[in-house]
Image (cartoon, rainbow, N blue to C red):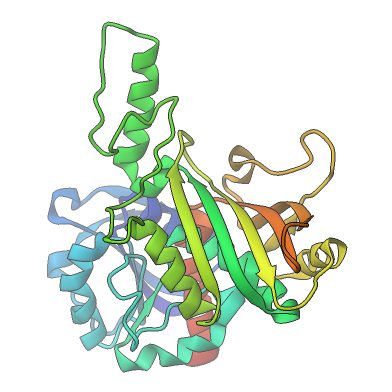
Length: 340
């Protein structure tokens, strides 16, 4: 016996990936509904070898449905998630709306799967920020071994993290560089993204950090350990898909780079590709379409007593969003609902 599953926001980048991954991982689905806004009603989306027509989320009755994967943004989630939850349908939300609510678990299954039991307070589970998700997958096994004191991370985040509009802007501006007659001024981003990098993701906060950087700090503490100190610099780069991170870790205890490499090789969701030769590491273009969080460039940091550096790359539309949501659904099914 399987589940009755809803995917809300099925026509967007993340919603389409959710449908693809549900099919790829053979999630036990008895019935599936693809929802979208009224302007997208009837749009066809793929689910394995099936074609679904989207339904109007505004008219949809969530009663009798087991779980709903939401990829519709905070404003729409604010309207529809409580309706779904009140109807008995567990919401797995990809927006930032509920991430910092103490009554809503924030879950990365490789890190804190048991937090799923907290879903019942609001019938809602939150999916973390894409940059946080891949980082905590890398940090968790190392933290278990040597206890992390502090993390300094610089991110190199692809434009797909800003949705279809971000991808279109990079594409259009890139073409315009080679066609001087046309000009594509920035709309989605603060400055030109083609052939450029932008050290701002989301809005600025009072202390000078951006909200994206704040998210990484707060979410890492909630998911992994509130004692860990985190400082982040988040940068948008002209890459279509795949987030990269340069991570510096300070531990309470010494951890040798070779042992760290062995630990990460055995860690769930992690793929280590770390050869000390030209090209012996993973770049964003190579991670696209893959489930894993890739780790390279593992090395000792000699400037602090117990330090390591590493390079972390992942497909942000997958692990950073759709895959993590589906993994949460799998945990919810296996640990709580137990139908499949």
